[in-house]
Amino acid sequence: MEFRNINTFLCVAEQKSFSRAADRLGYSQSNVSFQIQQLEQELGVRLFERTGKTIRITEKGQEFLFYANEIEKLGNQAMTAVRSPGDGARSEMGGLLRIGSIESIATAVLPDLLSGFHRLCPGIRIMVCTAEKRDVLIERIKNNQIDLFFDLNEKTTIPNLKRELLRQEEIVFLSAEPIQGEKGKKIPLGEIAERDFVLTEHGEGYRRELDRLLAEQDLAIQPVIEFGNPETIIRLVEKGIGLSFLPLFCAEEKVRNGQLFIVETDMPKVYMYSQLFYHKNKWITPQLKALLTYIIDYF
Image (cartoon, rainbow, N blue to C red; front, side, top):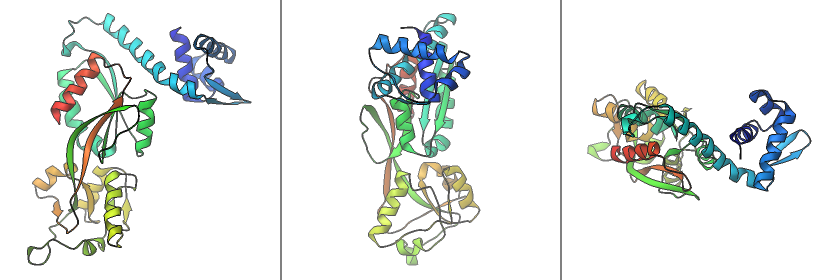
């Protein structure tokens, strides 16, 4: 099985077109078709369904996509390893690790985490991708386009993925000024729901939980602004646009410094879990093992 054919397969799968893959790789379209046919003959399965000018990856092709990405990555790591001197120590490790993350963890947690890991393993390159939809990250890890991804949600399992529960996270109401109930009592949720809010979009686990708890009391919040990035939401809250409902870790420093305030309501406390997922068939390279160990220690 030739690396060239695997690389061509990955390009066709990404471009969803033989002609676009040929343009990107600098081959003729007939050359691309021939390489895919070679690969299909070696594997004994059809990788793409061809209907006129459109192609669709088959179920077997989707299964092979995971391993093709792994082969390409390991090939690149092998070349890096033999070209770079080193005794195998963490500080000498090289290569690329690909991380997926939801926005809240990417903006509030990853800067400190990754800067610490970089000091430990300066030769390892990190590529981070975020997505508004959790399903996008799940699909990428199943296709081996990323090595692992961070999620913030209820305890959950995903078929074919391994999970590490990292930490329980409290989700809180935040305000630019102190808001207190009468005689020190917690503020009724119905009163809070009447205020202006800046919220994440409906896809976030903690937004869904908020909507569920509101619905139990026949309440609803119509936010004045919805935004996917928690860091931007915090800036809008600071400007007095409205309250928000976010993981405490997103605003912990500002709460500690008196720039933002937690609003205590009579709604049951909401907790989610920082979780880490990676494919059960993933080969744990020394680089990935170093990162996984660091992440668990960090949390």
